[in-house]
Length: 298
Image (tube, rainbow, N blue to C red; front, side):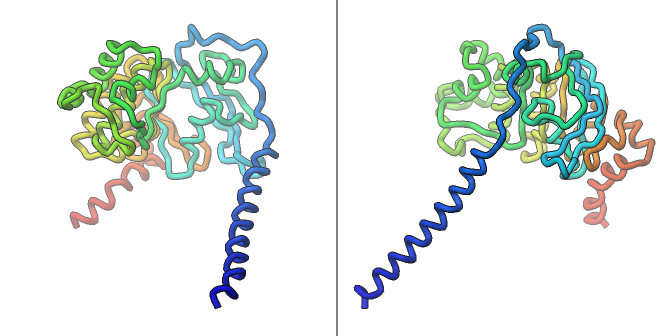
């Protein structure tokens, strides 16, 4: 019986392998059929003296031409200002940042930095103007020093330590038996989530960017750690144009300008107090985060 069923079992295994191969081939050929990205301009603008003023002029974008998600978006951001981008999930907040760094080209309109169209920069030069601190932290197997230096591979040990001090990292690293030579394991489980977040902020200090992007960088930590991270981010934001993507609206009260996005359009803009007085979409978003607390108290 075993000799009789063995060929049938082998055929079934081969069939599974063929199905997996077909699925893999579909992905490969789909990738090969993608069109080449638009090449960089032959006469790129230098980024050496860029200050960080950003403007969006009638920007229109969709991942597919038949599904436009950002429609006629316009805004002006002065250098050194803190801009909060708020709105419901899927409204286009993170997409806006991807367009700014030219991970995607817009369908129409213009995005300018210091009055220069971002298409007139080389992509590498354009992205060198930015530093991002994301909600999902990442650290690799290596020392604390190496993990921070990843932000600027040419930084000296002294510059790394100075960045660590500015990011509120130095004090907890000093508690490790090997200090900055402490090796993080593969999953970075020998440091806390908040400590990893502070490491990523230290990397951003080393980059010394003109424009800073913070994407809900404190959402996965406790309140006490959030205060430490917020202090580090306040140091990082000084003198830089900052885009803060936020879901907890209590974290953006002090923003110079709040852009309220819904379904790809700016439906409101202004300061926290101005938007609350309007009693519009922002006020509903702001009050909705307290509804669950009020229900529990009741």
